[in-house]
Length: 531
Image (cartoon, rainbow, N blue to C red; front, side):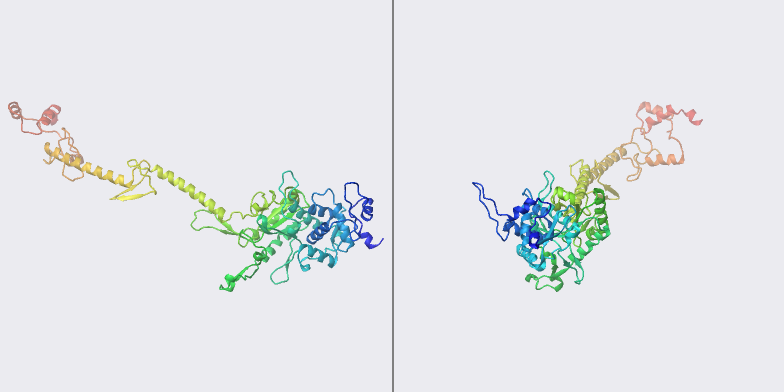
């Protein structure tokens, strides 16, 4: 059997009659149908459009099975027969080749030589130097990593398989694989497993790392510092508007020119897709990688000095957003389903939600506004409790005033300063009026028995009566105080003599204390006083 005949064989484990169909001329068509004769250049009968799609897909994926190509290029087809026919025709032209099988015994296909790379580059509209290699020999070991990358890309393009799962985004040509990026110095490289561009959903670029759980978590985490080093690289900005600025101000991050449209703070995001382990092991693996790479994605902590709390926010200008999921979740729910765990954030979200920076300044501002609203509410409730009972005024702030030698503080159930001051002045005025009235009334009464002064006491003294003295009062307040100090006992007026009593029968005595003397004579007989 010649090499040309071997390349014309269909892949996988197809029936032998498929080979016969590939080389025999078409049967006469039935009435009402159009017969298409297979040309000698493409004896398998593949279409030009499908062959171009296969070349473009292999240019992106580098190595793939017919089943993967069918799902990516013709997802509605009942089988991959048309794709296998296209691969057979391309193999006859020396553009593709197969050099191995997957673990499931699916034949793997790749581009063949410079001719295959040139043909794929023409389909993709790129140059051959950007195509990478042909993955020669990858199929001999089953191309396990490449198959996992292909399944990841298929999940992005096709969407989830679960009922009501979100659909896919973009096409296979939205991707590139084996793209190398030189780090500063030109000796080290960063090569993500896939680079995805989806500006239609707000993701100008997404670097994708597929981890089959064959590396230590520390080795996986070590990739992210290299991404940050790559993204930090700045190049000259040729914008004429910046011509007058200093050289340091005329630079821009290279990725902003390569993939414009970034609106989020921080560097382009990186997605980690883990597979080939149990759910618990994959969850632990994601957590371990997150812990080991925290310096790359955590961001810089900031807070306001004026804040009297420990709250703050994170700045992500020098951080790499990292999202992680499992290949199984991704295939089930698609990239827009709630499958992504953003490092540093709880729960799983859709891709666009997961890429939003957690605990950033906007989130802090919302929390601060809520705190200020609570403080304002509590303050307003306190102010409402301080409503003035006279005028109904509600204060804006708590206040304390010094009034003379006294300090006044507004309190619940109290008055505002104006009403308080007016009340104090009114009370003082009323007290002064009451004192003057008391002085006048006390001056008209009998004088103090002891000092013969006003019964109300010395004017302006601390002991001066502020009200009219009672009828039984005999001494001024000062004399009463002195009597108590000297322990002289109660005051007993001298009893009336017989002459005074006889005179009182003829006319009223001219003695202001007469009635009290008579009363005391009855209460305190003279003979008892001597005792």
